[in-house]
Length: 54
Image (tube, rainbow, N blue to C red):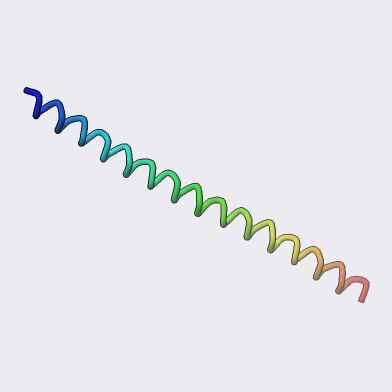
């Protein structure tokens, strides 16, 4: 009986770790996309102003 409980606990921990890794990777990808979008937006604004005044 104890072995079954240990196996269930180990399985839950493994699933939790995999879920955490997937969540963190998704957040990281979303974060880098957001940073790139903001950066590109800023570059676009600078280029547009430079073209308009240049």
